[in-house]
Length: 456
Image 1 (cartoon, rainbow, N blue to C red):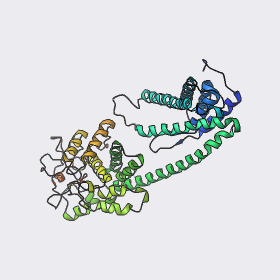
Image 2 (cartoon, helix red, strand yellow):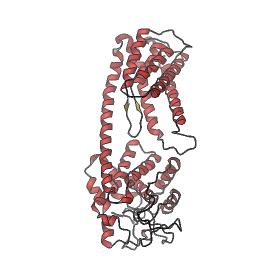
Image 3 (tube, rainbow, N blue to C red):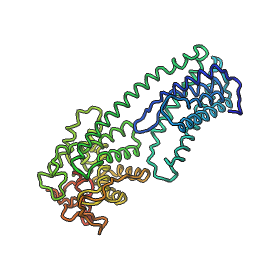
């Protein structure tokens, strides 16, 4: 800022814009679930300052972020202030370099001023992103070549939204001369209303998720070994959906399906869910009813939409040997094919009462072996890519109470006396459909027996 230039800076305008910037920055609102990031109208004010008071004035306005009226420690205030100042200063110089003029633009300045302003917006966003990326690297959030669990797409969406706000800065500058401080209100008031609406929608979505999480806990209290299973399946399903390039709204619906895929187990007796021995015909029939029961429980919840199909059909198989309807191939809804893969993967990598957890590598090998018969190969490979990039968190359960299995063969972790559902010993039918929470790996299983996909 010492370098200048100081020409074109009107002190009154500078003070008013700085005050407006602090007010706008103080009402920043998170706009995406699951991401601690948000946008505020302050970005529009910052770019309006580039036009009205030049690079140095814009930097002063940006540094006023330190005075924002939000609960924040001193280090964060200093970083945010410096970040806004540097981004605005760089944007201001690019604006001047491409022929932009400092001051209130008149009718004769259009459309010539548009190109320098757009370049200033892009520069502001670039500098801001570089500084944030550097901060994440310095804090160890991201490392080159590491398996980062950071989701970039929501952050990109936030940055694009912020750029949309920044484009309005030119409108603020254009009407500033006629109405002064009222100019931002004329431009931004509709956006304030829209942001309030978004905030209400976000609160509603959080309430939805809290309700679904409570239902998950109700299911998981029936079995010690499946605690956290629904939430892990939800995360795995979301990973697959994002890997397939699905839009955020659809990813969320599929995540809901993962959370509630086992809700029908509320109608299955606890002694059946926790049984480690061979199931009777009636017990196995009760197990096979849980997808339909789950669908009936939640079908009146309107916001679930596509999630209902995932809940009802997540035990269908491509070869038609699944349940409850025996759908074949692409007849199975896409959401159900995603849930099926995520469900079995979490089961295999989790400890159960009859066996220890498999490694992620072993589980992936099993999924690939069953691709094309039980699982959609596209979903399997999407999960593999996502896990390789982001990693997978396995549950903390190390062994069952009074653990009874051995480690002699890492691929055969069956508890003595327990049923080998991979080979279908529990099922009355000749070609049973295994279930994740019942499955016990056995390399001696028949060729047509699928170790994954069996779930009490």
